[in-house]
Every structure is written in structure tokens, then in C-alpha cells.
Length: 289
Image (cartoon, rainbow, N blue to C red):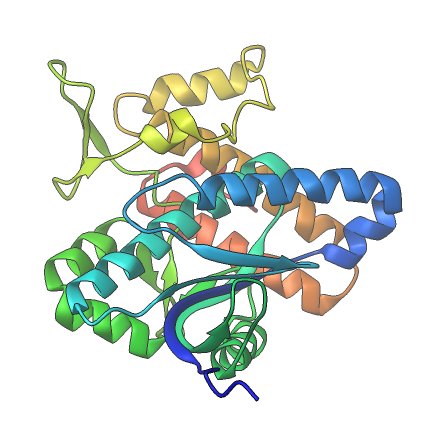
């Protein structure tokens, strides 16, 4: 008997694709397969995009687990957590923008056994419990142990993340701020870089290389939208404005078609989040009523 099997500690992201059953019923088996293959290919594209961390991931049905091993060097772990946060935020943007797909899940530290094809362990059980019982809404929460490691071992990185990719929700959990691209910006005429209100560079290179979440819609003939963009183009990221508009459309649709109060409450959370961003930035035209 081989006694070399052992679990190891990993940084884990686990999430569920919401609306699985309803979309399957609407599209039917064959159309749904084509739809989900496209969704999963986008997920793979984002995860394989590069950066400083190489992710392992497994996709099963409407659940995805992504993980990287904990290192002895605490700074490497901080970098890995920050890459998880950045990458999953971009993934949320792409899934909502391209497919009207919302996800719910968590980022945590936990134990897994992984042999290249088979993954299980207490970390997966904890991740499922956090996703199902704590995340609840279409959001990605950051578990306290994971957040504290990043806060206390990488204070500067954490402060940057707080100004960009994360926010504290009403219940006290840190969550991914996937509307983070709507930042008040200054245009540096001598550089292609944009600077947000916190003085940090906004890296939009991922939107050049990743599937463009805005390419499926053409707003050129929409006079109202063009006026909106003309009004705010000197103050806000065009990418952020585009995405905020698509987010409004997606949230309104999901609230309208929700078949029960439990589902409706999930997207009311999205509505409240969306409206907070609009109000904070003075963009009343995109508030969801």
C-alpha cells in the first residue's frame, strides 16, 4: 500500500455559476452545451492569461475550484492572493459583460489533496460552506485568514487592493469590487497610462488581450448612451462606463426574470452595489430604479 498520500495547504478560490438550472431550461440541452462551452472557455482564457501566478483549476458542472500551493515565503503568498483577487475580478467582468453570468464564491486558505487529476480535502468542504452559507449573493468573499495574511504580511499591496479590486461589504466581509474599473481618472496627454483618484496607475492591458466584454453590443446608434459617454468621458474610464451600462442591463434583466424571492434577493444585492457605485461617482443616469 502506498502511504505517500498527503494533503497540502493551498490558496483556494471556489465559485458557483449562478442560474445554471434556469438557463438550461430556457436553452435546452444542445444550445446550453454550446453556451456553457463558451463560458468555460472564457474562464480558461482568463485563468491562463499569465501574470505572476500559475493557477491549477478544475471545472465540474457549474462549480470551479482554482488553487495554488502555499509557499514558505510569505511575500509569495501575498502576491498569489493579490493575483487571485485581480484575476477573479476580471473574470466577473467578462462573464457578466459577455454572457450575463454571475458567480458566487470565496477565496480562502485550506488543505487539499491533489495528484494532477483528483482534488479533494477539508479546504474544498470549507470553500463550499463559505460559498453556500456566507457568500449567498453574487459576490466573491475573502475569508478572514486569507485577508489577514495579505493585510499583515503585505500591507502596501493590501492598501493598493483596497483602492482597486476589493471593498468591505455591509456584513463586514471583504468582497471583490468587480465594478472597480469605474474610477475617476486624469488623462496624462504624454502617456497612455491613466491615473485614478488614489494616484495609482490603472492597468487596462487585460482588456486588450482578453475577450472584450463590450464587443457584443454596438452603442453607436444610441443617442442617449452617446450623450452619457460624452458627458463623463473626461472624468471616468470609458471601459468602466461601458461595463457599468452592461451591468445595469444584466441586473435589471435578472431581477425581472427571477422566479422566486430567494433568487430575486441575490440580484437586489447586485442592484444595491451597482447604485452605490453610481451614487458615489455622481452618475445618476445609470441608477437602477
